[in-house]
Length: 65
Figure: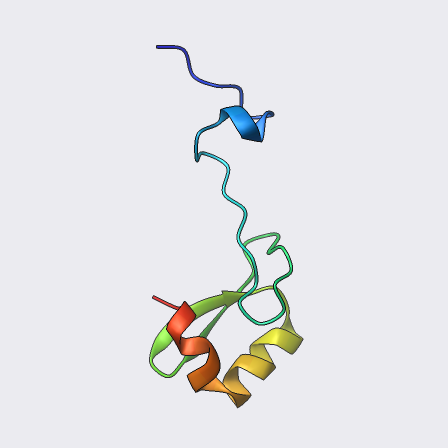
């Protein structure tokens, strides 16, 4: 079995995952910012989204672990 090249996302079969911010739906880069809302941890793209998630925890907690 030959591994798929990582520079071709369509061939990597799940090795390359792009996460979207649950607050604004932008792509999360550099690991994002982890924030705890309603007892669950979610990852957002920026400080503004972290603040919004904390202000409305019920809206975003369902998207966490």
